Length: 337
Image 1 (cartoon, rainbow, N blue to C red):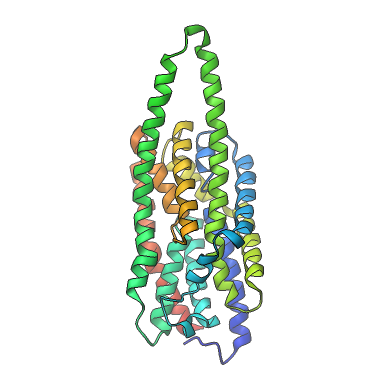
Image 2: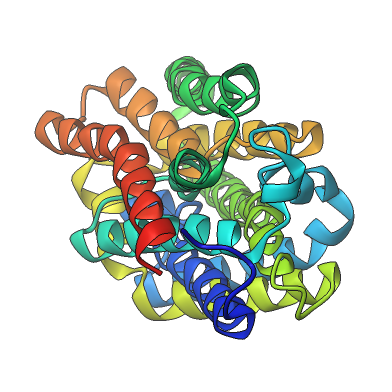
């Protein structure tokens, strides 16, 4: 079993690497979540969208130092297992290793999964292997599982409603102008939608940085090599690098395979995603940007009748598999290392 004794230098070094690798994997899988609708609706090219997505994510990571401090403590494992175990580098190593391996595997397969979900699996697997007391199931349910399970359904419902309302408003406005001004009005509406679309996409990536950075920094902080601020900055840089280098496959799934997106769907999905993720970050709730953004895209696609059912099913199955795979890997790391 992993402990902080025996060979602590090796454990701490492995923990620092695993935490940084998890941040890198998180960036690769999550970086494009806000701009998936922008590329999918052909509002921007992939390269231009990637630049904006990475920049907004990095800014969100820096801002997390003041906006989402409560998440730093929540994902240390305190309240789920005993405080003494949660503070050990060995426990954090198993959590980070299980989550990082799961997220990178999904990234290479093109599945947009939740790093938050993988972290919860890592916490459970490491807790089962290392804790001498039972896991706090009540805290697991209310503090982790409930927000993760409910958020995609809420975002899908709101995305469905938002797209229907936006489409009705556009159809009503299209009937109002005279024939001579119809073309001018449509151009103005398109430019406005594009502007709102880009702004909402940037807010989502910013919000993702705010929400995810503290969760990953909590693991690096357990190495005691850097301070809380230093941990957040290391995680932010690693997330940006992963997103810049390896986000293409997940971007293709979200932008082109789940739903046949147009600008109206993109704006509707992004506004809902940005609002829910920022609201959850402020309350310290560990929602998944992946679940919220994909749920919103599914909701708007359902309203427009443009969903690709087979792809949606495969993505949902990858979500179901995330927690047990991450828990199993974390459990194995706890014994092998």
